[in-house]
Length: 182
Ligand SMILES: Cc1cc2nc3c(=O)[nH]c(=O)nc-3n(C[C@H](O)[C@H](O)[C@H](O)COP(=O)(O)O)c2cc1C
Image 1 (tube, rainbow, N blue to C red):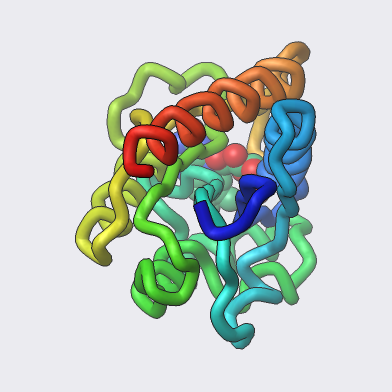
Image 2 (cartoon, rainbow, N blue to C red):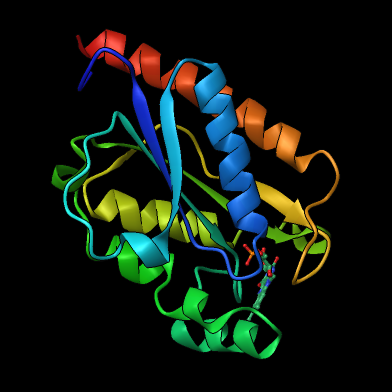
């Protein structure tokens, strides 16, 4: 463990704020489990230096069955998303990071997607997990999907509570890993 209190950073991409709300709920769950935890948008993390945490989480909206690309983010802006949220996405950010920058290889991934297509296996989380693995991270759990009602949201009722529970569960899984490694 990097210090006495275990810590986690939740990095998210969010065009319409739904993934941001899920990220905040996960942070609450981590904090209730005793973690020092913060969430930060990928757009403001691009240029910061090293951060030491025990667990890195990444969340992103599903765009065209995958992580967003500049073209799909431009589409979201045309549908009303603020343009400053479109300047960088999780895909580009992952390609710029390595475990060294966070002091951990442990990672977890979540995505948001519309409720009616939730069973599609191809979504942002699967892609993010694959790309993070390539960068040298180890996924603590399989990617998890949180559901929105439509492109702009809102989150389906109960999803924030589920995200909070997922945060608590991940905290426990992370602590078990850290104990095991000690
Ligand atoms: C260009 C574009 C493509 C999308 N493609 C998909 C898709 O393939 N599957 C899906 O479930 N949702 C899709 N969506 C809906 C997004 O997943 C939804 O907007 C997102 O989860 C909302 O999260 P956010 O508010 O954090 O951006 C798409 C949205 C946009 C703008």
